[in-house]
Amino acid sequence: MAAMDTAGVRTGMLCAWWGPRGPLISNDAVAAMVRGHPGRFAGVAAVDLARPMEAVRELRRCVRDLGFRALRVVPWLWNLPPSDRRYYPLYAECVQLGIPFCLQVGHTGPLCPSEPGRPIPYLDTVALEFPELVIVGGHIGYPWTAEMISLATKYPNVYIDTSAYTASRYPRELVDYLRGHGRHKVLFGSNHPAWPASDCLRDLASLQLDEQTANLFLHGNAERGGARCCCGCYRGHSRSRWRQ
Image 1 (tube, rainbow, N blue to C red):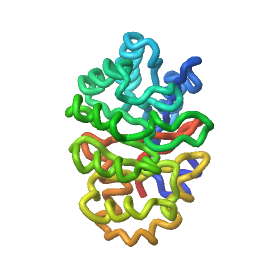
Image 2 (tube, one colour; image 1 turned 30 degrees about the vertical axis):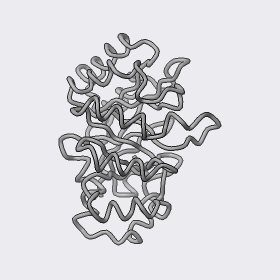
Image 3 (cartoon, helix red, strand yellow; image 1 turned 180 degrees about the horizontal axis):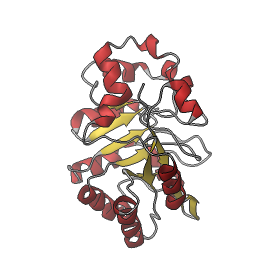
């Protein structure tokens, strides 16, 4: 919270993590942190992708009982692209619960296959088959940033977040999209603690955003009904929609 205060961040997303071997950070641990600091954090659920019905029940519990605001799955952690059948019950439940689905897009930092993070054809298929599902693709999608931009342009409910990148490292094509017709489709994200919000925001002025676009990017797009969350995150928590 001290790091958030330093960067002028009002609210951060705390993300649970669940992988093939079980929970790395449990939903209940995240819920306890959210309860302990009212108004500063919002919970993002993680579930066991290998057990779809248990995953659906856990997602319902997280949203209805714990007040979580989104679901996040990391495709590379499972080596399963988002078009795999095991995601589909969760997509339907996200629509029913009225929450966004968050995932990482693009290459992976860890030494594991990056293919599950490629936006086309995998995420393209999901957006086509679930037009009511709000999708937030975190980590920009590099080296397939153009593919991610094309999906955000094509589908009303697909968004991009900039987590894991400082402003000075945004690809030029993303900056052009943000400054133009994509101003309503790009959401700021950090990657605390690896990349605190203050580091990610340090070179924000270099993007030369007008005031309206900057406000949409930093908090306005996230506050709108559909795209309330950021995806991506860190193995330790806070990092989402940051408001100055």
